[in-house]
Length: 380
Image (cartoon, rainbow, N blue to C red; front, side):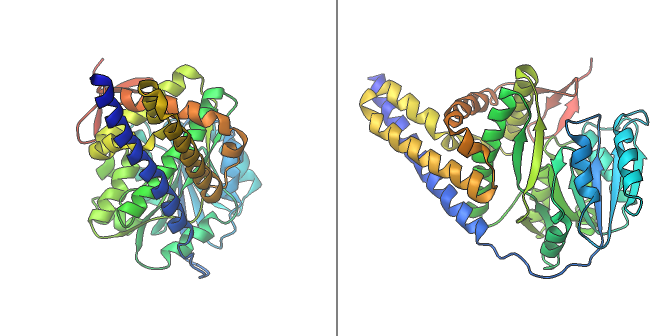
């Protein structure tokens, strides 16, 4: 008796995931058809780069910001310690590009949980310009980043923007799987949220753009100091306050590095637990973003349903290709298409694991997660 009931439930869930795949196609088309401004922007821009240690490819990443094709910009960098090896990399780049305005800040230990918020807050207070680009150290771009985002903000009604990213893995197998998930499942979800909600109600790191005046009206960037997903709530609060929030037309490269199995799993579990706290209802709805695991479960319970599994694989393949290739211009999905089901099963497992536990590990420290998405350092 239990098996037929479970089969019916799985069929309903699978049907929902099929609808979701179709929505991804519509969402990708909507994003790609959005009008890109043709203005030639001249507004000065401040680029804020929090640093911590030597990320893989750090010098190549930072180099792409020194070589921007834009008439007026400055680069601000912040790290906790004066002895951080990242400063040696920055010294070499500043020597190569003496005409680029560049400033650096040693922040010391952050007085609250989110160290990134502390670094960015310090840099925002010293930035010369209203338009600020907040970009992590593992981001690589071409010469047109600042020209593109400044043109989008020249429309006048934009307060916060997120640059979509295509993840570029390091040398590890687990890094490759995570990149496939980001470039298909994760951004499929973001595009669909943009379509269903009639606009963007969130922001996503690792590269966001905002007006400093908008952030100040929200209470300053330090308002997000206790939130694990500070980027998400920044966009959420801006949208709630009536400011325009968009997904930029510019796609950056997110160089995610070469984490081995242990650190990679720890990172992915932290992300899922943080997502559950930041948007509880949306997190539950992520069950529809995993059609292949649902199709395999249905096949296991009801072997005669194998045609439904084939339809599921086809829809997932088309949705994954559309997001990764058409939107993100990413070569991974086409090259490693046979690993997408493996990644989907792994992602489904982390989604389930995200419902359990209230703590995360981050840079060697343990934190408690609160129900509202904030977090705090656990006492030793």
